[in-house]
Length: 462
Image (tube, rainbow, N blue to C red; front, side, top):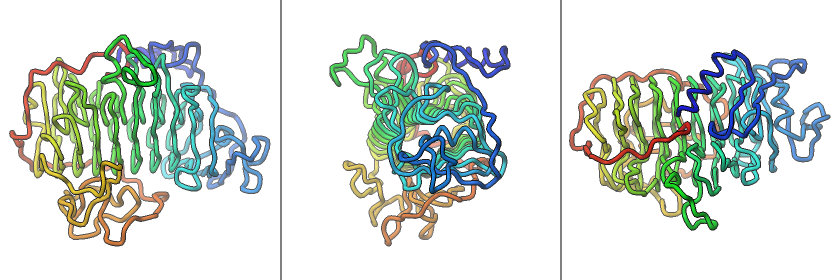
């Protein structure tokens, strides 16, 4: 994380858009330049089209689409939409060696939307590490990225992300994407290979499917790492910093080289982790939980509510570090843990972390989790047993609630079966703080341990 601080310091000192970062900061060597484009802006509400059969010399209409998403990204203005046709999109651009570098964004009430016409039909291919990032924010805010499939990004010498919200990305939405096979390289780097990297305020992560994130273990693809970094440095979602971050309706599984969600190292407020399903997490010794909150930050006015945890290591949440986090009005409510406790902690957590209505060591009743079908069975204990939270639809766009109460997990059960509703156009409620004061600590949910921390990093992430 020292590298992350250096980058912030460089940004503050230089006051410019040119940052030089070597592999120790998780970037390719040489200058990383963010260059805002100067094309004449299109009218508000304009729609552009991108197709593998198009040309970047075209006007970007439906009849004459662009060839690359980057071409559209270079000209958008607030309120514009970019529809991306089915096909594979690759290459790399300036910021973070990304397939798409976002330097132009929207404004309040007028997001710029990049959307795959058909869900997961537009595929962002990192070509096994040719690109380190799928979409990277390089100066843009107020952007929505929806329904893409992103895979193959990796960086053996530094960090990689399916979507990187680092340099900018405030008031942005990451919705309905499938992000997988990120960081599939043999490396000893201390920098992370992440599904999504968040280091900004006001970000919504909703309805994504994130899986198979992380580097090779010993023996995979002939890999023989010389350190133990492969056990704990890669994550489904890495939330380094940022207030008002909402992570809801996501399905995150097979995060076997780190954690589904890591909150570290900066303090944050109004971090809401709601109605997600986590499964098949890191099983390496000492790498407990699906969510890790680590070291001496403060977490305040936050919620971890209505989540399902399946096949975790010992507990759903791990709180640790040489100097433990502190909590103020953090509610952990109405979660189900299939094979463990709600919390494992290295030391006491104080009175600011409050537990209520959680169920431990109980099967939530999903259809076929072994085959990654995490829908709820009709007899599921998760049905109608969730807390009321500002999550108006589920992972498939189905309205919540369907019955007498909110369901737990990413799916809302319906006897009518799966939904094909699109999430586009849903009201944006990510930044409404949830404030609940009546809760009690369940001491039975806390297993205090003397376990050693998961390993400090000389890079930017654990």
